[in-house]
Length: 168
Image 1 (cartoon, one colour):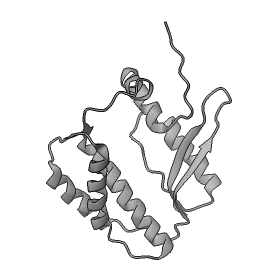
Image 2 (spheres, one colour):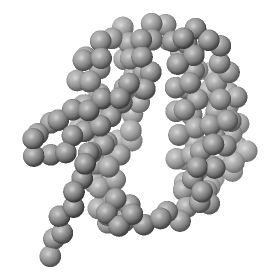
Image 3 (tube, rainbow, N blue to C red):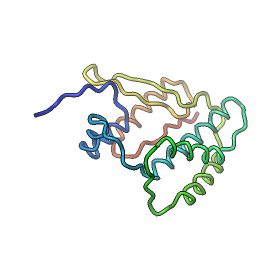
Image 4 (tube, rainbow, N blue to C red):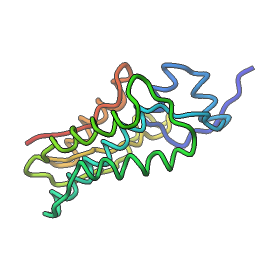
Protein backbone atom coordinates (compact mmCIF):
# COMPACT_ATOMS: atom_id res chain seq x y z
CA UNK A 1 0.00 0.00 0.00
CA UNK A 2 1.31 3.45 -0.92
CA UNK A 3 0.80 6.35 1.45
CA UNK A 4 0.62 9.86 0.03
CA UNK A 5 2.37 12.61 1.94
CA UNK A 6 2.11 16.36 1.54
CA UNK A 7 5.35 18.05 0.53
CA UNK A 8 5.26 21.83 0.66
CA UNK A 9 8.42 22.35 -1.43
CA UNK A 10 11.33 20.58 -3.08
CA UNK A 11 15.01 21.38 -2.94
CA UNK A 12 18.04 19.98 -4.70
CA UNK A 13 19.15 18.20 -1.54
CA UNK A 14 15.73 16.55 -1.15
CA UNK A 15 15.72 15.34 -4.76
CA UNK A 16 19.30 14.11 -4.42
CA UNK A 17 18.57 12.36 -1.11
CA UNK A 18 15.51 10.62 -2.55
CA UNK A 19 17.42 9.59 -5.69
CA UNK A 20 20.30 8.11 -3.69
CA UNK A 21 18.21 6.33 -1.06
CA UNK A 22 14.41 6.63 -0.93
CA UNK A 23 14.28 4.87 2.44
CA UNK A 24 16.71 7.31 4.04
CA UNK A 25 14.69 10.19 2.61
CA UNK A 26 11.56 8.67 4.13
CA UNK A 27 13.22 8.37 7.55
CA UNK A 28 14.26 12.03 7.41
CA UNK A 29 11.29 13.72 5.72
CA UNK A 30 8.28 11.50 6.41
CA UNK A 31 9.03 9.80 9.72
CA UNK A 32 11.25 12.67 10.94
CA UNK A 33 13.55 10.19 12.69
CA UNK A 34 16.25 11.92 14.74
CA UNK A 35 19.76 11.68 13.35
CA UNK A 36 22.22 9.53 15.28
CA UNK A 37 25.32 11.28 13.97
CA UNK A 38 26.48 13.78 11.37
CA UNK A 39 29.41 13.38 8.99
CA UNK A 40 32.40 15.68 9.39
CA UNK A 41 32.27 16.45 5.65
CA UNK A 42 28.82 18.00 6.10
CA UNK A 43 30.04 20.09 9.05
CA UNK A 44 33.07 21.17 6.99
CA UNK A 45 30.97 22.10 3.95
CA UNK A 46 28.44 24.10 5.94
CA UNK A 47 31.18 25.95 7.83
CA UNK A 48 33.11 26.79 4.66
CA UNK A 49 29.93 27.86 2.87
CA UNK A 50 28.98 30.14 5.77
CA UNK A 51 32.46 31.66 6.00
CA UNK A 52 32.62 32.40 2.27
CA UNK A 53 29.08 33.78 2.26
CA UNK A 54 30.10 36.13 5.09
CA UNK A 55 33.20 37.15 3.11
CA UNK A 56 31.01 37.89 0.07
CA UNK A 57 28.57 39.86 2.22
CA UNK A 58 31.45 41.88 3.69
CA UNK A 59 32.73 42.60 0.17
CA UNK A 60 29.24 43.71 -0.85
CA UNK A 61 28.98 46.14 2.07
CA UNK A 62 32.63 47.24 1.92
CA UNK A 63 33.51 45.84 5.33
CA UNK A 64 36.60 43.85 6.25
CA UNK A 65 36.23 40.19 7.14
CA UNK A 66 38.73 37.49 8.11
CA UNK A 67 37.31 34.42 6.38
CA UNK A 68 39.72 32.05 8.16
CA UNK A 69 38.45 33.18 11.56
CA UNK A 70 34.92 33.10 10.14
CA UNK A 71 35.45 29.44 9.22
CA UNK A 72 36.42 28.52 12.80
CA UNK A 73 33.43 30.39 14.20
CA UNK A 74 31.10 28.71 11.71
CA UNK A 75 32.68 25.29 12.43
CA UNK A 76 31.98 25.61 16.16
CA UNK A 77 28.44 26.90 15.59
CA UNK A 78 27.64 24.09 13.13
CA UNK A 79 28.86 21.42 15.54
CA UNK A 80 26.81 22.98 18.37
CA UNK A 81 23.70 23.07 16.15
CA UNK A 82 24.16 19.43 15.10
CA UNK A 83 23.55 18.28 18.70
CA UNK A 84 24.63 14.75 17.74
CA UNK A 85 28.08 13.15 17.58
CA UNK A 86 30.27 13.99 14.59
CA UNK A 87 31.57 11.02 12.61
CA UNK A 88 35.09 11.72 11.32
CA UNK A 89 36.76 10.03 8.37
CA UNK A 90 40.50 10.08 7.73
CA UNK A 91 40.83 13.68 9.01
CA UNK A 92 40.16 14.59 12.62
CA UNK A 93 38.71 17.91 13.77
CA UNK A 94 42.08 19.66 13.96
CA UNK A 95 42.98 18.58 10.40
CA UNK A 96 39.65 19.77 9.04
CA UNK A 97 39.85 23.09 10.86
CA UNK A 98 43.35 23.68 9.46
CA UNK A 99 42.19 22.82 5.93
CA UNK A 100 39.09 24.99 6.26
CA UNK A 101 41.11 27.94 7.57
CA UNK A 102 43.55 27.60 4.65
CA UNK A 103 40.76 27.44 2.06
CA UNK A 104 38.90 30.38 3.57
CA UNK A 105 42.11 32.40 3.85
CA UNK A 106 42.87 31.80 0.15
CA UNK A 107 39.42 32.99 -0.95
CA UNK A 108 39.06 36.46 -2.43
CA UNK A 109 35.55 37.67 -3.21
CA UNK A 110 35.30 38.78 -6.85
CA UNK A 111 34.50 42.37 -7.73
CA UNK A 112 30.97 43.32 -8.71
CA UNK A 113 28.93 41.27 -6.22
CA UNK A 114 25.35 42.54 -6.23
CA UNK A 115 23.76 39.95 -3.96
CA UNK A 116 24.60 37.16 -1.53
CA UNK A 117 22.38 34.19 -0.57
CA UNK A 118 19.47 35.38 -2.73
CA UNK A 119 16.55 32.98 -2.22
CA UNK A 120 14.04 32.24 -4.94
CA UNK A 121 11.11 29.93 -5.60
CA UNK A 122 9.96 28.67 -8.95
CA UNK A 123 7.06 26.49 -10.01
CA UNK A 124 8.10 24.01 -12.68
CA UNK A 125 4.75 22.25 -12.95
CA UNK A 126 1.41 23.02 -11.29
CA UNK A 127 1.16 19.40 -10.13
CA UNK A 128 4.51 19.54 -8.31
CA UNK A 129 5.52 21.45 -5.20
CA UNK A 130 7.55 24.60 -5.88
CA UNK A 131 11.34 24.40 -5.94
CA UNK A 132 13.16 26.53 -3.37
CA UNK A 133 16.81 27.40 -3.92
CA UNK A 134 19.23 30.25 -3.53
CA UNK A 135 21.88 31.89 -5.62
CA UNK A 136 24.94 31.97 -3.38
CA UNK A 137 26.53 34.94 -5.12
CA UNK A 138 24.89 37.05 -7.79
CA UNK A 139 26.75 38.98 -10.49
CA UNK A 140 24.03 39.67 -13.03
CA UNK A 141 20.28 40.29 -12.97
CA UNK A 142 18.62 37.75 -10.71
CA UNK A 143 16.32 36.52 -13.52
CA UNK A 144 19.35 35.24 -15.43
CA UNK A 145 20.72 33.61 -12.28
CA UNK A 146 17.42 31.85 -11.59
CA UNK A 147 17.39 30.25 -15.05
CA UNK A 148 20.93 28.98 -14.60
CA UNK A 149 20.45 28.02 -10.95
CA UNK A 150 17.45 25.83 -11.72
CA UNK A 151 19.69 23.81 -14.02
CA UNK A 152 22.28 23.47 -11.28
CA UNK A 153 19.84 22.62 -8.50
CA UNK A 154 17.26 20.47 -10.24
CA UNK A 155 18.81 18.76 -13.23
CA UNK A 156 22.15 17.91 -11.62
CA UNK A 157 20.86 15.22 -9.27
CA UNK A 158 23.92 13.13 -10.10
CA UNK A 159 26.36 15.59 -8.50
CA UNK A 160 26.87 17.21 -5.14
CA UNK A 161 25.26 20.59 -4.57
CA UNK A 162 27.31 23.03 -6.59
CA UNK A 163 27.28 26.63 -5.33
CA UNK A 164 25.89 28.85 -8.04
CA UNK A 165 28.39 31.60 -8.82
CA UNK A 166 27.74 33.84 -11.77
CA UNK A 167 30.46 36.06 -13.20
CA UNK A 168 29.96 39.12 -15.40
